[in-house]
Amino acid sequence: MTETPYQDLSRFRLPEDFRGRPGWYVQLWWIVEALLFRPSPQFLYGWRRWLLRKFGAKIGRGAIIRPTVKTQFPWKVTIGDYAWIGDDVVLYSLGPIEVGHDAVISQKSYLCTGSHDPGMPDFPIYSKPIYIEPECWIATDVYVGPGVRIGRGTLVGARSSVFKDLPAGKICMGSPARIIKDRVAGPPR
Amino acid sequence: MTETPYQDLSRFRLPEDFRGRPGWYVQLWWIVEALLFRPSPQFLYGWRRWLLRKFGAKIGRGAIIRPTVKTQFPWKVTIGDYAWIGDDVVLYSLGPIEVGHDAVISQKSYLCTGSHDPGMPDFPIYSKPIYIEPECWIATDVYVGPGVRIGRGTLVGARSSVFKDLPAGKICMGSPARIIKDRVAGPPR
Amino acid sequence: MTETPYQDLSRFRLPEDFRGRPGWYVQLWWIVEALLFRPSPQFLYGWRRWLLRKFGAKIGRGAIIRPTVKTQFPWKVTIGDYAWIGDDVVLYSLGPIEVGHDAVISQKSYLCTGSHDPGMPDFPIYSKPIYIEPECWIATDVYVGPGVRIGRGTLVGARSSVFKDLPAGKICMGSPARIIKDRVAGPPR
Image 1 (cartoon, helix red, strand yellow):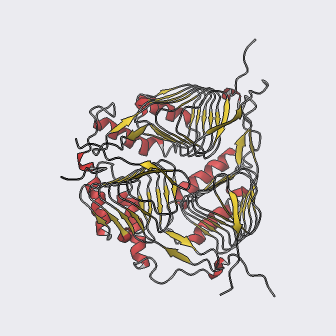
Image 2 (cartoon, rainbow over the protein chains, first blue to last red):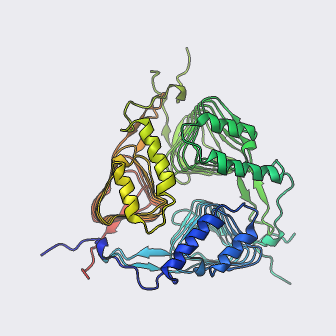
């Protein structure tokens, strides 16, 4: 009798159509990202929106996406009007990522839709969607895990890690992120 | 009656002279950083000090700044004699950043002087200075937030997050960083 | 009488043979990494294994190493058969790093073998080896500090920080990482 391994990665297989596009198309996006997206000057926001849309992303008008943003599979990404995606943000879109209008994802934050089943030796990969609802502020260097929904207007403080859903209209903080207090919408100006 | 939004980013405006230099000058720095600073071989410390000084940074002699360091606005940065700024450190200098002599900022640490008022729908940006006093050691992947002062000789352990001032001569750790014990200066050798 | 400084970095000296190779060889690796390793298309796993082996790394067959992995000194690195090293992982191999067969180091994780003695004003550098035993899963954005050994099959959750050894066959989480429960090996498929 042989012991069952925790992981036997020689048996790992990517599920068919996991990426949602053929391999050559994925490669093409990575080349376009490296040569046309990343080296673009910061102020060319329209150019980067156009590139992402050409690869199937739904990008609202006025969305601000920095050249250092990495998007794994743009065809699984939706970004609302006037949303901001900051420097060095990673949209690890093995599954769908939706960022609502007027939401802010600050620098270095990582939205991770993918994971593996650690109870199976062939380490099966899966993805779950992430929803950042409108008017959220995900501050600097926040991690958001697979399947998480963050409710409208909620602020997640810098360096927090979000493993479970957070309700709307709150200020949250920590690893794992916990609700600190209500977020009060200010007076219109 | 309409509900007040948490964030309406179409109304966001950068305050006049927030960057401290005209737009073309900021762009010029980013081009210089991409073409002359980042690709420079590691041992050319003098070259990188010279470049930063040309763009208004105050850099002491013998300061060790790695090619992967990102400096948002060099004209708001002061680095003391023999200080070290490690690989992949970000000096997000929307406001002033001062690093004292003989201080060490280790790899991947992020000094963030900027934030937004989450109580106003036009999401006003502001900055507060960061002071890292002489002989501090900010270890690997530490976050330091806007307005923070870290006192002389204090050591902040790897992966900590600093949201409030820390006194001098301590060893601190955690998120948020807390004082663990005194740091004892060793015998001269 | 003068006060002893916490840090006097003008007195710092790298110990002889700390890097294990002559300076020109270290530079050569950094040039090769920048020009031949990092720009290589993702699917060229064999090419990157070959490059690392040419610079003294011991790399098993079928090991999956992404182009964005940074390896400080490849001659101090051992990676087992079918192990995965994910995007933006840093193998900061001032000292030896061993990753066992079928182990996974997920994106953005940082394996740091180096540190300094904060009790000495000349800030002496040292390194301690890191051992990631076979079939471990070190998830996204985990920090592993100098001298740490993680036992066979143990899973360290996303965003954790590991400062001390972890035993085999556990699921661990947090900063510092703590044991949550046993990891149960699944049925063979």
